[in-house]
Length: 368
Image (cartoon, rainbow, N blue to C red; front, side, top):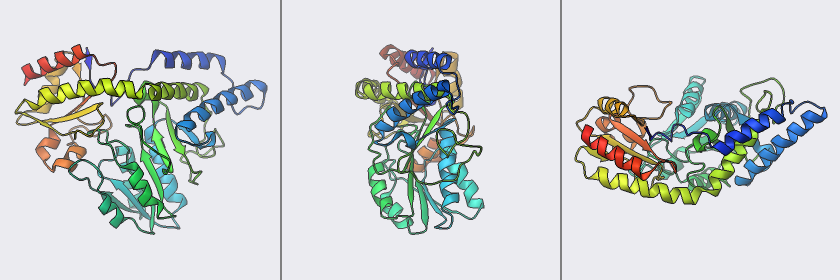
């Protein structure tokens, strides 16, 4: 088997899985209980929260545990919009946001919120000039991803943060799900950061929303205090500790892994560029983990079926996209419906071997 869909999900690191099992067995008491076992369980969560928050130059109270990035995105978008509806009704997102950002914004639009979508330039980066034109004193939220999940383009988060900072009523949120563990970005001027450990060899069904500046928002789930007042539910100690470990492993190995993955990406890009039926969509400045291509005069579905027969697995668009829909990211930078409808996302890992890349290239060329 050759797995080239690491952007959708990663296998859990053995050390992380061991941490999850060990903690689940040992710290089974409810962290909100007042007896000694509950107190010890809470201390373990606080320790994990402190470790996670340190990466974002924040305090442990900034960490909100959720079920995943989709919940985190919904929480911050709906929560900020509702809390600040008396200050303004404008929300700004980019043209390549994940469906868990787009969908809540579409919902808020039915309630009277004004949602503006900022286009990308030819390099796949948010057009900052248009952002400056669109943002105003009525804007309560700007939500722009750190890394596009389909192309791997890195958005200018620090520059966007400087623009947003000029508007005191506006909150800046970034969905960093595709960035954490793959690229180091300065989040010091960002208010909210979304990420999920299953993207960097952690546990599935777990997400984090970092509220760096203690901004007020309305919870999605009501029912009492958990680790914070913004998300109710019994805190899961093992989720917190395993996420902390997965994050530390990813951060400590980021540069070494990135260098290795870049070599694989360069080889793929070089070999695929030689084929007339291939159009490479990912700019060279994208993270090396992702290489997005389009097939010219070929049916992507047929090619994918043939690859699966050979036990090779990758994606056309993100796993959360509607089936059969063209890639909005490819469409955003190429304005070509054919390229957007026939795109393939190859996503790599430090676990990917050079032998797997060679075998993929050989079989892919044969199928084409």
